[in-house]
Length: 325
Image 1 (tube, rainbow, N blue to C red):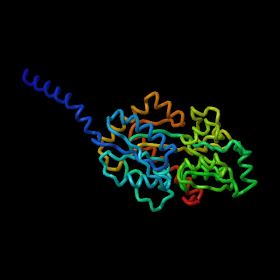
Image 2: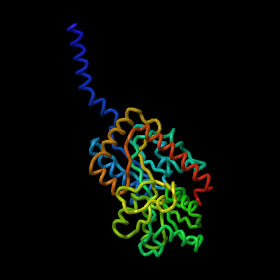
Image 3: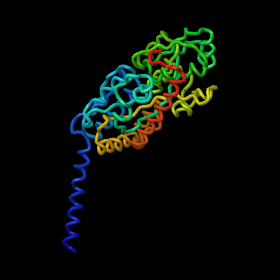
């Protein structure tokens, strides 16, 4: 009995000593890339850099943000889906690539569920209806009246055809019964540049990308598009409060890997990203951009993606929305 007890104790001690090594094996041994499907200066890029900086410290390996912009985030998703499932290539997934594209891109090369391994939801933000402060129509009723007085003449920018901003505009057009021009760009940064410069009148821009310019006085926030007001914008009304009940058009961000990413590695990454999201300075940074409700299990993120696909499929079908509309 004593010998058996000693052997059990020895085995337990060996397992305990080996645990750190086994834990380390669940992470890649070399640098890790987080692929972003939009140009620098946008919300996806900003949140990816916040997470990457903390993971670099936590994992003691370089976590790099790499831009592969195009097709409203689809190019980056398509690229990531074909990469080796060794954890060295991750994607900052986005509502565009994983919830809108399945309904808007009939020739999509990837399946947003089966070709990726969800890791963690990073954050959900409202879109902000914004304009240059010099615009005369600066309330939702005034904008609706302006669009009706000048049908097809008022321009709303977006980060690209089929983007979250585009779909928010289409939902607004449906609910308000107006005809406005959709002006697609390649990412949020050029949208904001032209808004500030007066080349376009309005945009349903991501809160993440618009916030620095709203706080700096270069843009004005008119309304937000989530059912509840973001903590960082307590004084900006929601579209629901302004007479459009049920109006919800969010932008969300989450970390995913290629489809065959080992479960142990995905779980380790989930746990560590959750630790990052719980850090007080990270929470402060995310709150500044209106990014809330991130974190949770891998299963929660999977179900969230599925629900978003179903919601926007209905909007696209009912509005007969095309990606090049």
